[in-house]
Length: 317
Image (cartoon, rainbow, N blue to C red; front, side, top):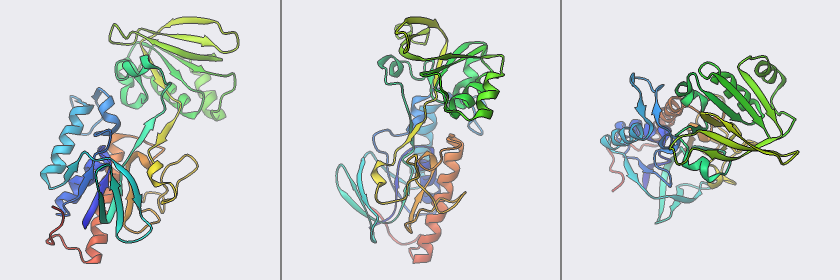
């Protein structure tokens, strides 16, 4: 019987491991198929508190993992394949074996929607990004494009004008899903241009090791052309990694885990907590994910203490 199982190994999961480990809960953390989460696909992270000179995303995750392990978190590379939260104890099955646990913290994160291009994948973190807040600073004085037509695209484009020389929004139709205030703000920004009825068919610069341009296609005329740019930001939404929990926990219409209230990490199942991007569709930052990971660990500790699972009690292997 595990006292606490943590599913996910991003900033939220590892921070939960740090706090739960320091509370002597000896948590078992399943890293899954992408240990480190989305930060392992980024380059330099400049907005992590305390890292005044910046830190590489993968390096930050290595440090968080080591810190969690230092306090007694057991990190496993197993991937959780199913869960059963319908009764106590909680049941978690991985690709190797099954476990029972008193409490569980879900920190499986979210994945940015991609364009689905091989060249996009090859250049991700080398001029291709899905987070203007994370990477916008690196494009000071450069020309970039934002792909998308919703609120996220308008917000990303507007933010990027703080750094970029020019931002072009590419939308696959002539209709925008963005709310009128955000769309008007973008259209009134002199640094933002719009191209409608276009899709990106290739990101150029694979051989150079960085983005040099894109190939685009007009979906109305089938005309193809090339556009010289320095960066591409995909703003076509995120997909929360919640398939495991369908039918077990409440999801909102976008698929994010629903907690019992704003600013809370409790789910409808007692002893199951959610943190990080799997339940946060608004901020999606490493530091906010870490904050909710801390909250989830504190809530798990309080519940376990209430149930009489003291820190001195032997747990785990």
